[in-house]
Length: 226
Image (tube, rainbow, N blue to C red; front, side, top):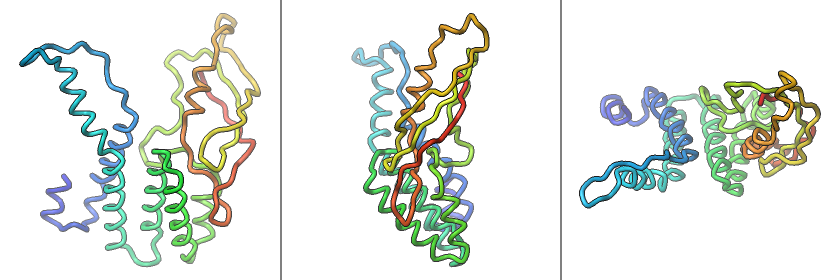
């Protein structure tokens, strides 16, 4: 789709944004995919098909970080070419790049890009409002339309847990405290929400920023089903 649109409409067509967003979403999925358990079947010299597939996928995964950067850079170029100087979209593409660095735990790179985005947003007429929207509170990653960011409730809900935690300047959860646990039924009272809490601790966040610097946000209260 990208090639066809670029050939027909040029490298800066707004029509490129939809497949670029799809490709970025795909890169996020590739980065977390753990593979499938399968014995495969034998081909050629006795190599399991699953090993062949795994090798191909590892080649894709090896370029994942670089590919994601390239996709976001292309999105920013499209916005820069088409949007007026008053538009926040080019700076918001930088936010996506910072999020991509943070997702891959490249925190120094993420901070540098976030600060560049801060400066570009602050220079706009509605800068204060945009800074408050994008940097005024921690943002669970990835911050993408259509991406399921938060923890999905399980198929069989045993109860709910209310937790308090902080998101530190490194974009990770700290100081988590279980405030309340409710079970759907007394028979579920032995079900432990620890697996959910481990998944929550593994999440990545864009930290809150003040005066261009990442800071810790304390006392975030959320309720989750387990």
